[in-house]
Length: 269
Image (cartoon, rainbow, N blue to C red):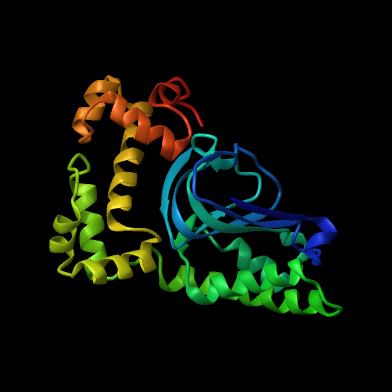
């Protein structure tokens, strides 16, 4: 697990109140609901997370960008950060020029795709903050300007998250039948790709293996049903292709950091 956080003067730029980086292979407590007067961008490089903004729940798959607007409560839907890799940055619009203050105010989306260029730009800012030089503030200003322009262009050209056709077929198949315990062979057939091809492309576009995505989707569906339905945990486990409620509970706890029973007790977020 690797967590970095930089605040105030540590960010080297007055328009950046805070920023950081988070990488974890196991679920951990964190990202409880919070709000502040800044725009916050989260760049999800790998993994899947279940977050909320306002009263809406978002199931996010890498690579994507998540935007929380000023004074809007946001955070993890369960108070847990799932296995993932992401960076985040807060932007104080009052410290931007009139042009960029207007630009950022027009970003009316909550999630969009994360391009390699945008991720590289964010990492460039992070590198300057980690190892500052005499001219790092100037460099960060240029990179922040580039990031804001890229964010506005992505929102205009890609209103939704886009995947290649073979990968989209796999995603759609899993979503249509979340209770099916998908095998690698079945997913390869759906994609029309060989094992190595599917895994390479899927990891590049989604952030992990096809089977890991299928399991994650089943667990996120379980999370939704626990909050929105009155199905018993045993019935829910059966409907989603788990061999028993114990099987579901073990997988659910590993993924979300809490048990299905605890999730059902805490339906609000």
